[in-house]
Length: 387
Image 1 (cartoon, one colour):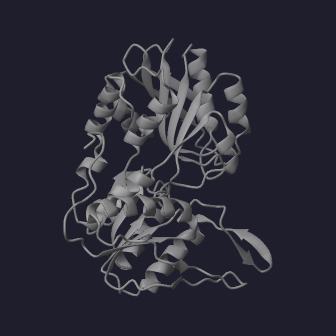
Image 2 (image 1 turned 135 degrees about the vertical axis):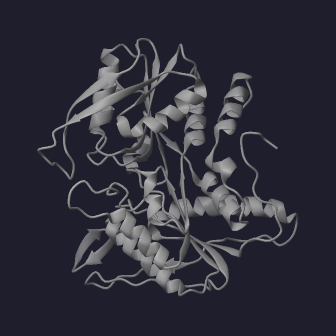
């Protein structure tokens, strides 16, 4: 068996019959995950009758005044259910008083609770896969303000959810709000590196040719993972903010100050959880280019591009950025598929492996901690093997 990936489960007794509810916000990703699971379960069954699909039909229709309800069109009795939801998918729409309205994170979260309510306790177990964690950026209290993420996790636990899987949480310490149920914060470290090695054939991962740069203090742990694993240097940008003003819900950045070794002639990888407007990343890339960095690559779990991709296209044409890697865990703007600097990182196989392991009540250790798989991948690539 290939050393870079953990095997799918081959145990005899799952927790319950597997069922997947892919909400409207996550239909495409859910279908990809379903195909991976079908493929692997067919191998395990060795000629026995194979499953056609694990997807369970469900819907959340709305009345013309905006009220909604959840309907599950198939039996869920005794099933080990996995509900996939993308609270960031603003492409979902509904009719509200004759006006077409885009669904907000609040709408998606409310629909998730409706689906759990419609299950009505008949499932063997309920697991929620919410890559973009609802309220994740509202995770701590600085002044008299809400704690949206902790409140949402409490609600889900009270509704009977037993496991919550998210990706690259803004602050994984929100798990402290629900110590009695499973909370897994997983990352796309392996998938990012594999995508980079495919997209950048001449990438040299060593101290002489490459350097990690954290975009801020909060992202140090992400970038430190790669820098420690590869034995390369780590630089850090410190954000100076204007705390007397709030713009779009946050204090605006006044300047970026760099702390680290010389970047001249090196490829730079910037790893972050989220690209919102992207202004900070472009400022950082411009500063690194001013310091004579060779190429600038960024890997982000969620590429939102809230202000569009125009500035990124311009910076690519000017040679400031080279590639941006982002997962398919949340909705991406359609125009990104045509952008020569954007590389989508498919996470469906990884999610299928997580579901498969949980369904058989197996440890997630190998999947959550991919250090050895990453080193095996790089070794195979350096030996000239196809990856």
